[in-house]
Length: 272
Image (cartoon, rainbow, N blue to C red; front, side, top):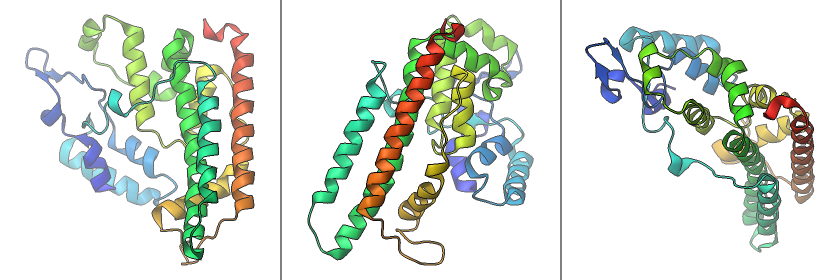
């Protein structure tokens, strides 16, 4: 956790211009960030809260409460996704699912087939995450109403402190807000439903469709990606073709239902 944090956040003295006249930093790349908030957003549920708190307290004792982003954290267009059409996220999702499921047709020995199935299973979850990211990107870029709702109502943006002097540098507040939102989205873990759901709730006034069917598959994906396909007890996952097919169908159904909910929201005045 210590290494993860320092790769993404630093003492503002290293990365942030300082005004001696005003006596403060210009957080031109976002921030300031709170160590406890960022650590909890990333590691809550994976690491005991007491350990997270202990590390946050240590970081504050060394540098203080305000942290600047490193290049790994602030908005980077080269690491973003771009969506031009309303239905593009769903079209891309269908294409990705078709392409990754085609891997199952490749030959190989028994070990290779097990590995291929596991990787395809993990990729289905990744495709769902990308769909959510791309959907929100489209609306943030194409609709000021969504941007305004997120900035005014989502706690992450609503409660973010902005130094008064920085307001003078904001000639295009909507563009500024879009960059802030997309910067946050780049750091998201898109299967953390407690973080993802509020983006759609405040941005569109819609609830995500039920994610219950994804809870266990996400645990399996975690083992595949981070434990070489083994559980904590050392048991090897052997995902079946049927499980992959069922998960793919569930992902598509989820995506289509979310699209319908957003379409209904369009008929309201939320998108003005």
